[in-house]
Length: 166
Image (cartoon, rainbow, N blue to C red; front, side, top):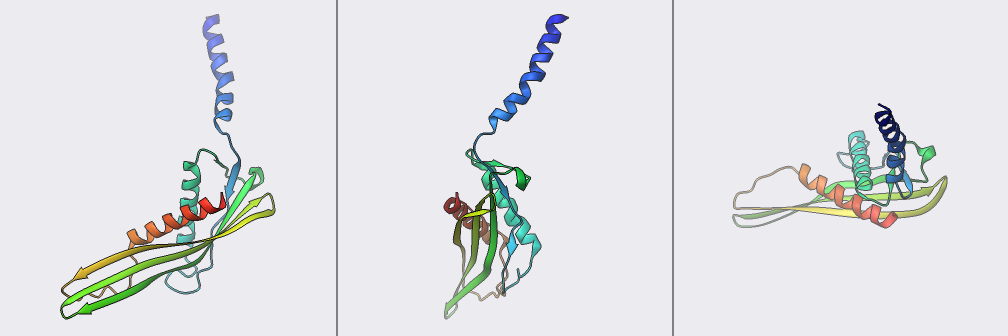
């Protein structure tokens, strides 16, 4: 019985230390994303800003050198992301019955890295994702957003921005 008590005590005593030592590296907090898009369908869209924040947190979680923290006061660093531009650039070409549409989703972001309240670094990133459709019949899609293209552009741009900042 005494042996079982010692084992339980050892496990309960050592487990908290194991979880603390597993988290190494500087801690970082992701501030809410600011949507400063001035034109297009995503002006003031809170869902887009929330989605970008989730992508930023996901990318930071995948890095072993950083520890994501949910409280700004406890974090060594904080990062602020601002959406500047997000829209589609359409290019259409056609000869006789042949038609080609090229839709490029363009996103521009600004990121600021803080240590405490001091601004350390400011970087800009631009990302593009292109969708090309070729047909012999003209089909008008009206320049609507393709979810796959937009997601790809957001993720690539966010990775690019974080690589520049961190």
